[in-house]
Structure formats: structure tokens, C-alpha cells
Image (tube, rainbow, N blue to C red; front, side, top):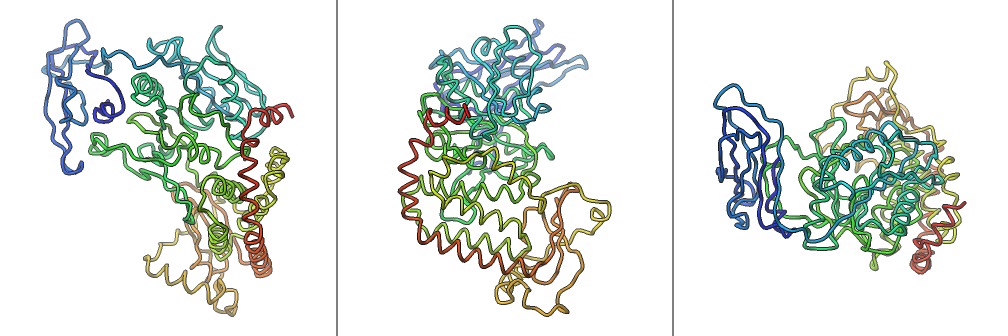
Length: 543
């Protein structure tokens, strides 16, 4: 219920603000302004308006001098003077004329996620029907990559279902964007994943922000919260460091949103490189380009880097919940990451060279190889080799068949642990300096493979599921990678023959990167307009 006044002043044209509280009984309603000092480290609260609870049931209060930038946020406080006070709800409003008329279409791509999609669609349709500002101005498009979903909705409900080949998230969102652009009704599109839990009021806030926005290119991103720990933020936008081994740098990672200071803080808007498509809304007119045909992993990154990221903001209350990504990652994910991010860096960054790609590939291969994640290295190699085949091969790829093949991997995939494995005591992490020493020793000891067998132990040790336990893997022959809160994970074991074969393959692929990168950069850039065109996507839809 906190109103982020500073952000609304900076981003919109609103000139006044009212709070309406539906309540009954003997008590008072107060609007409290929060002044942020010392860069938000100190917050001073002051009652700026108050009134007795109205006998009519609705108490209306105006924020005085809303244009004054003294208060960065406001909240409502209801205090009881007797035991009969009941609060039913409330809302913020303004009498300012909207800057533009908005027609918002949600585009949800799904593949056999009915248990998530149907409740989400039901929430959206209920909102469109019951919220006056959204009625007749919001529609739902579901792109069904599995071609099997059916909705039991009222006649005339603003929902369309389009059956699509399984072209991944990229293909589903491309289908949605092209469909809505050609239809011509929508001013804005909201792309949404099929495996999220939606906060319905996020749509009300998004619609209002677009309606009053100063910048007609404004894009809105919904922050992702953990499904397992609903108060913990996973990401609220992201930066992209293309020179780094791990280029994605989430903003607001692991913020505890239960903290009062975070809810009341007036934080200046942060610059994003991209926003993930679990919830990203943007004007239809922002570009004629469609997503890259890369199936999954990175379609939102490239689109954000090229088009939406620099215009994007987050807003309190615009959120979704999503399962822990550590449970979704597996070797097949690394195929897409290595291929797709190589393509993205090649297309977007003029100063990206072969040694940047080679350095990231070698370093990440080392970390996986020396932590006994052999399947991960195999799929990374396969992904880089797919990049090296060039844009013509990408255009010709049957991604549905490729994905079915990639999913056959049976190793290094998180799965429920047996009672025996679940009972294994979680290894207490050593302090960071000790871990760094173990990491450094792994190189001269070749990951422990040149150590005598007598110096390597068969005791099963544990490591976090999203880590690369290089130090542990040097001394132990088996590691259980497991989730820290859920009884899921997988076991890896030392395999010397596989290790040295993969080490040789990494060297060969690195050489191929050095020899072919410059040519591939020219080819991918020349092919980009075709890769993202309506015509090339339409051929895929019709395949």
C-alpha cells in the first residue's frame, strides 16, 4: 500500500494524489509522508493529512502539496478509537488527465503449464471485468506451444488462444508480438512467462504508469520474488557485463522485502541493460524487430539490450513469484547459454572480440571440468560449436527436434534425493581464503587427477547445487550437489578418461573460435534483419 511518490513524480505527469479508505467504526485515517535523508539511510515520518473514519464507509483524503518533493513516499495508517473498526480496503487516485490512452495486451507463452497459466488468466480476466480503468482496455493472448490448452471462460471474454509449433519461449513471444502488432488494437504489450504466480494489482499499476508516463517509450519490468521464500527478491532488472565470465548481474538480488526501510525508500531509478520476460511491458511502437530465433535463454536479453532495456523501470508492487532457477538449470541449459550469449555479444557489442568469447569459454569449462561436471562441459562445447556453424545453420535449425535431443541428458539434473542421499550431512563451507587456496591448487594438480589414488578420498561431500566445487573435487571422488532448502540435487563422480578427452575438446574449440570469430561476427550482423523479420518467423510458424 505504500505509494512511491518520488518515482511517480519523476516518471509521470500526475499533479495531485488522493487516498480513499473503505472502513467503518470509530477511528482515524492518516496519510503519513516519509522523508528520506542521507541517501535513504535515515527516514523521517510525518502525518500530512488525517480525518475521522467517515460514516459513509469511504474516507477521502488529499495529499497536500503533492508536487513538493520533500516526501518520497506515503502510506496510510488507520487507528481505532474503539473495537468496532473494520478496514475493507483502499486505493490511491488522481484527478490529473491521462497523458495517453492505453490498450494493453498480455502475451503469455506456454508449454504444458496449465496449473500456472489457468489461474493467471482467471485473475487477469477478473481484473479486466471488475476494475473500471481496465474494462475494455486489456486483453489476453495465450500462445500455446503444446497445442493442448483450453480455457473455460465466459462468452465474450477478452482472450485469444493461438496454437503454435514448439519454438520455445522465443518463438512463442515472437508469435505474440507479431499477432498483436498486425491486429493493431494494442498500444502496449506485456510479455509473461507461463510458470509465474501473478500479483494481480501489478497490472493496475503498470496500466496507470503507462497512462501518465512522460516518456512514451517507457517500459515496465516486474520484479521476480522467490516462490519458496515469498519475501525474498530474486531480481528487479539486470545489468549486462559482456566482458565478464558471468555477464548477467541481477539488481536487488536477495533483498528482504519484509524490511520496512525497503518498502518506504524512495530509490532513484536504476539503469537496466535488459529485463526478463517473466514480466516485461513495452510500447508496440518501440521496434519492428522480433526476438532472435534462439528457442530459450537469452531472447529477452538480446531484445532488452537492443530495444527495451534503457527505457525500463520497476515499481513497488509490480511483481511475480517464480520457482528457484537452480532447479531448472541442467547441462542442456548450458548449450543454449553458450550458443545464444555468443550470438548476442557478437551482434550487440562492437568491441567484443574472439578472445572475450574464448576467455569465458575456457574459464567456465575449467570450472565445470575441474568440479566433475562433465556433462555440463559436453553441452557447453556443443553450444559453442553450434555458434561456430554460423547464422545459416541457426536459420535451418529445427529447434523442437534439437530440444528433444538435448533433453535426453540424464546427468547433472536436479531431482528428488533418495532418503539415503537426503540424509547426507551438508558440508559446512570453508572460509573464502581456504576455498581460494583449494581453487588455486586445482590447476597444478590438474583437478586432482595426477594425485595418487591414496590421496583422494571416496567420502561423499556436498556442495550448493549452483556452485562449482573445484577445491572439493580435487580431493574427493564424489560430490553431491544439492539444494540448500529442498531435498533435490545430483551426484557426480570422478572419470579420468572423460576428463582428459573433454580437456582436449576444449582446446580444439578454443582454436576454432580464434580462427573463425571475425568472419562469424560479419555474418551474424549481416543476417540479423532476416533472423528477426516477420517473414522468417512466419515460415517457422507454418512449418
